[in-house]
Structure formats: C-alpha cells, structure tokens
Length: 468
Image 1 (cartoon, rainbow, N blue to C red):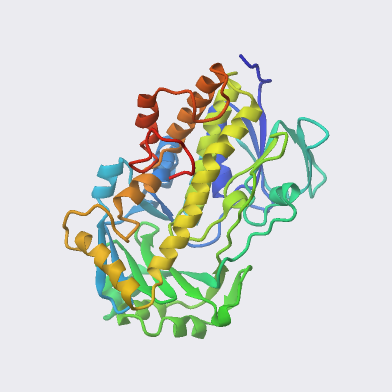
Image 2 (image 1 turned 135 degrees about the horizontal axis):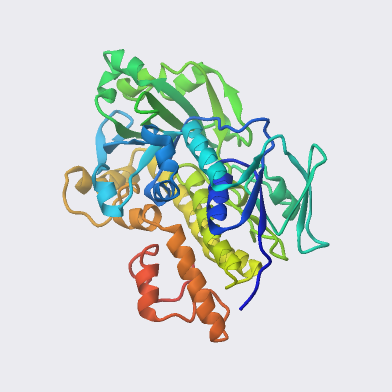
C-alpha cells in the first residue's frame, strides 16, 4: 500500500465558483487547502446561473444550500417558444425533476452562490487569500510546486490546481500555445429586470404570473429567462450573432439600440421586457480544448474553464467545474488514506473527466444550434419532436434537451462523487490484476449498476470508448 506524506498541501489558483467548490471538496477529503485569489476582495460579478440537479446535489451535500437559503429558486416549468410566442415545447420541473432525479433544479444569482461557497469553504478550514495574483509557477525542478504572487509571497504545494478561468495563468504555464477561442460569432447579453417592473406592465405582466423558465427561439438568436433572488428579479440571457460574423474574445460594451434592434421582431411580451434593460455588455462564448489537463509529473492540474470552457447553451460551464472539484476531492481522499498516489489521483481524474467535459462541450454546441434554427424543415422537425411533451403524451426522445430523458439522465442525473468512487475501485481492481487502465478489472454487474448512472442505455457493459 502506498504511503503519502500528510498533511497534503494543495493550492488553488482562483476563488471562482469552481475553485471554491474544489476547496470545499478537498478540505472535506482531509487536505490542507490554500486558495490564491487575485482580486482585492472575494465576490462574483454577473447575473443568474442555473444549478442543475447534477450540482444541486453538491450544494445540499456540502451544506451550501442551507447558507444560500431561499435565494435558490426552484421554478415550476420550462416553456419552449418560437420568437412569436407560440409554445412548441414544455417540461414540468417541479416536482417532476426533483422526483425523477432526487434533486432540484435551482436558479440563483451568481453573487449569492459565490457567497455561500465562500462561507462553507472557510467553515471547512480552507485558507482564502485575496490580493494574491499568481505571477510565476515553478514545478519542474522539484516534486513540489512553488508559486510566487504579485506581492512577492511564495507558497509551496504538493499539488497546484488551476481554477483561474479562461485567462488562466496556470494553463498558460503548462500550455502556452493554447488560447480559448470563439468557435462562431455567437455571443450573449446578460441582464436583470425587477419582476415588479414586469408585473406593472400591462403587456409583459403575463410572464410574471408564476415562476417559470422561458426559452424564445429564433434564427440566429434566442432569449432565456428565469427567476432569481427569491423570485424578485428576472434574469435574461440573450444569445445573438455579432454583425458581419465578427469573432469576439473579450467583453464589450454595446449600445442599447443594438440590443433592441436584435430582438425587435420577438413577441411583444418579451420584447417589452427587453426594452426595460437599461445597459448591456456583450459576453464572448469561448471554448478551450487541451491535449491534457496536467503537468507531466502530475503536480499541477486544471479544472473548470481553465481546462474546458464551453458555450452556455446547456447551462453546464460552472456546473462542470463544480463536478471537477467534487470528483478530484474523492480522488484526493484516496491519496490521503494511502490507497493511491497523488499521480494516480490526477491520472484517474483526467481519464474520467476529460471525455465527460468534451461531451458537454459538444452537447452545448448542439443545443445552441437547436435553439437558433431558421424557419424550415429542420425547425419543423424540432418542433414536432417536442410536441408529445407539450401535449403531455408519453415520449422517449425530445429535441428539448432540458427535458429529453436520455440527456436529463446523462447530464443532469450525473453523480460526480459516485463516478469517482467507481473509477478508483476499477483502478485498484485493475492494478491487482496487473492491468492499470481505469475501467478494467471489475465484475460486469457492478460495472453496469454504477456506470448506468452516467452513461446512456446500450453502452453498459461495453468498452468505454468515448464518454456518453
């Protein structure tokens, strides 16, 4: 049995949503965690974010949900609409989603989520250091990693985790030639409008009668809305393509006239809400693809947007980073208990999580295309595939991926902790039999039982190949 030096010192570069989730999971695993944050204070900018069941389970498990309280909003239903307001798809969210997956589908303001993660991370014992911008990383001359910050302070860790987003200095250190790129001219506006303002408008007030998520689909653009902040605010995400198909890789200020022009032909109810927006910025949708997420010696590893930024069309960017942290936490627990080495833990994490993240990147591309189809045969086929759910008839597949049974189970029903436990079990069984490859050396019944939680039907018991 491998003996690992204790306590295991782990550093995280970046105190965003993914970094804090990882800090919680790693502290609970028994590691000694230090989070280095460049900003002068802890906080989160932006608007709303979806905490789908695959990560609401983590918020509950870690006690973060109790801290956030009723700022976590569980909405009643999802309505899929054409731009003229015609309803073409529907998913009953409450109580059906909670009943089927065992966990709720929450929506929340990013600031409330971040605040809850900070409080729990500190309660678990993580050190959160602000004004600690990482300027250099030394990792090749020693098994340990030494980090220097802008103040001249140095920190030494057995493992450094890059949780510092799309502009990650940790990723640039490992892969200086990689740059997150916008795959298309598709971008997003983000805005918040008070529900009370919507309720007072005679045209728009119908949209505020109950707490729902609404998706308005059109060629080259869409709008998604949902409630946040105890149901007091309406969050809007407005997808669009930049004029002249220009690729955008930085946040841009945009005139309110350009925003309104893009959505001027939408249903009057949602157009009225869009006209309530007072200022807006254009946010790029950047995708990161890497050959590896770690250093050759496995003493540095990437999580979240630093490793696999993706488009926002499946609401899985932050969720996938939180899954990374939960999975890595389980692996580190096995390191601390002496069952595997630190290098083993990083290898298992990469082997299992990289295909999962790649699958979500591709699925997000697909959903963005589905929501932005031009009128014609493809759009008609999309709407026809959603119709059984809209009519409350039995269905097996749907182009509404938020309600499609296979997608819901494979993405929103995924359990990162159980996946990690199973991967470690497979690794240990394989090692005893002389086969070190993850996913081998396990009885078929156990493999089918657990892998079935996060793989589609028909893949159980077969070779792993690609994920999902």
